[in-house]
Picture: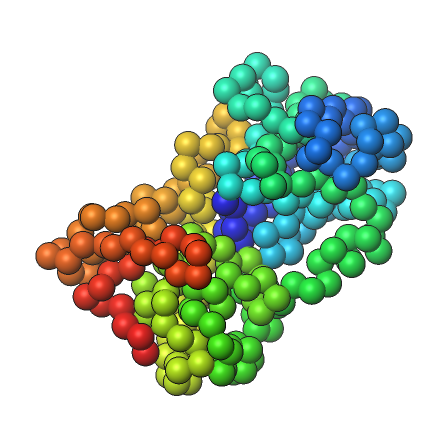
Length: 274
């Protein structure tokens, strides 16, 4: 599913297209994907403009000029597309935001994704329990170690806990664990500060590379001219590479396992418990 790099990529690209363009209609194509009735959504949003876009964890937060928030949560299999109807014939969307310039933003949240129309207060309440942003410069190495130190869980579970640090899902948890040389199943409570320090550096390195290369949503460009989105997928080291040679040790193959009910990928020759 889209994680921090994918949502950051969407935020940056969409900011070039949809800001300050009047919204003419919002077409709700799947009622369960939206928290309000279609008529109410249109009554509150039509005629307004997107003033700016922010990302919080794995949410995209579109601020309208009347103070409303369009909070987008995209589950596995979901994506966004911006353009004209003729360019979006291959994707089934849940919500279509139509703009005055005759372009639309198509939201596909997939089964568990949601398109929330909120007040600022409601959006704040929805996001209040999220931990600090994984890429926030204010999250120092020392603070990161304090957050994870002694926590009783597997590494993969801790990395994907949005209340600890926001933005990391299953895909990047495995990539970060590989870069840090730690098993996804490693017990966090047994990790020394040195290992947690490696983990912090790995988190910053992997997420920054993924942001710069457009995240992992290969084959799902945001626009017809988008050549960036999905670029990281070809650079991944372990995720969904079961049975392929490790980039660190060609004679060793990537293994798929399960950690706390989630699939996980790792290199047995170069990743360890500590």
